Length: 151
Image 1 (spheres, rainbow, N blue to C red):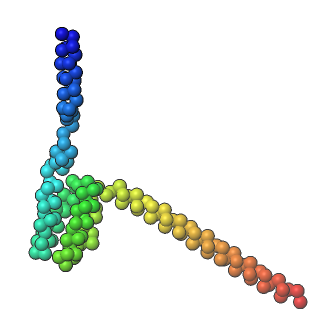
Image 2 (image 1 turned 90 degrees about the vertical axis):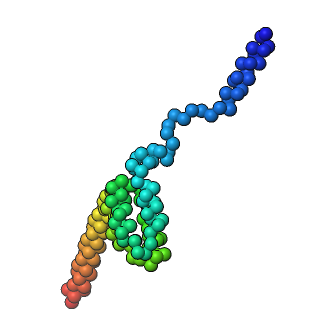
Image 3 (image 1 turned 180 degrees about the vertical axis):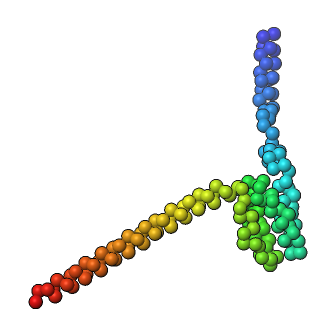
């Protein structure tokens, strides 16, 4: 009796080892769909089905989504895909298309601050070089005046 109880208990424990654990979170694709309100699919399809005739119409159609709702990863991929499609179709992509996207705001602010710091450093270096050159000219003119007074 004890042996059969042990066998039954071990078989139950062994069989439950192969059962997958219940999911604690929803699938990632579901989360993505909920977070973007289901708009990524239509945008991706619009980009893949763009032609030379509907290129500008497609750009104006998907620009609000790229500016407001998209994340940085999908934004980069979409811009790369649109650029590639434009080259293949022989169409000009607008230079400032979707440049002010919400997902790139932090990066743009950081880049602007970096450029301002570099410009200030360059101006300070130029001013220091100008002062150095002025000091060298004064020193040279003072050296030329000394031999003239020895007569």
